[in-house]
Length: 179
Image (cartoon, rainbow, N blue to C red; front, top):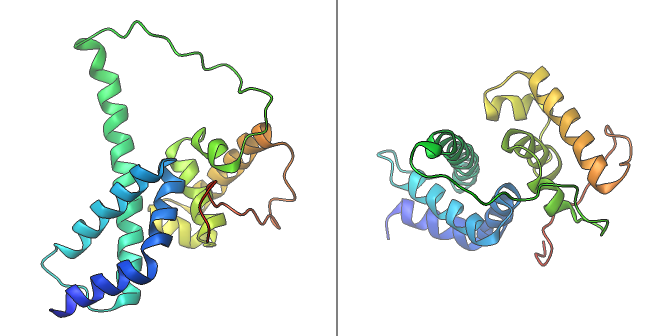
């Protein structure tokens, strides 16, 4: 087995479930999360430069997961904008307020736009600082702060008042997934 194969094998065995949980929080579906991780692994380990450091490998894969997720959203949004030229969708979904039943965090996350969701996941699940999030998403610190402010406001409308946003400690683990 070559060095990159050993790194890949070690990464999948040691951190595979954590990567899938991370992707599941972004996509909202475990199967889509698994597919997203698979795509990220292929993207990272099929490059011309082999990854030899297991610690760096996880960082590369996490960044690839985030990039692939955001690219897919952009692609879907672009397709939705031109789809009306091909077919007319007569079904209209009722996007009214959610039922009064208690919503779990994963369901609430699905209501956020992808950039807001990515900021929330990176901040409260990956425990990154605002500058680290800004660097990872290639946006300014102020934009990250605005996205987090907007996301927390939207989450509060769904989940009720949250503790002080500066001391908040949300456990963002999808239902049925253990850490």
